[in-house]
Image (cartoon, rainbow, N blue to C red; front, top):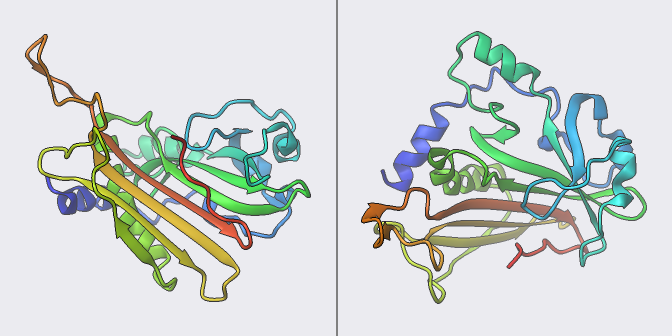
Length: 238
């Protein structure tokens, strides 16, 4: 299936009639983190820059300072959408993937977090596709970038296709590694959107020892970070 087919498959599962009470899109940069309704989200924890959550914050968002500061000085606080609608959707046998298995946007499982300064002000958001998802969901994770480009369509985006680095290879005949950057029309916010679909070093398609295909040996990811200026979006680990 090509990338266009992947995107169509993901979008077909999106039902805008079922949405969480509070999601990452409800966060306003510049607001106190205390204004995020802790009763409408779950699993408030320290984030790990795209990895799984670490320290659970017993007191909720007010515990943000327990999360290690990143080089920018900001603290990453992870949360998940309340899954009550998820259970309702399953009970109705709805074809709905937006909330199943955790937090998702545009039918893609994601990890979301806010970036908070020492004064308890939200200065950014981070969204990374969830590597814990199923192989099928991981495979189409790269297509989330198309939705996010559209969401920020009024921002003048500059996009660059990166060539394969040492050890990187296509998945079949497809290689994607794109980075888009943009400032908001009023210049107060800055975004960085990175998407990839490739095999990294060691992710061989075929196991020569077992003579079997290696299932899931690829990287398919979308990563968005939006911050208030003068902060700059951070780079992914590694």
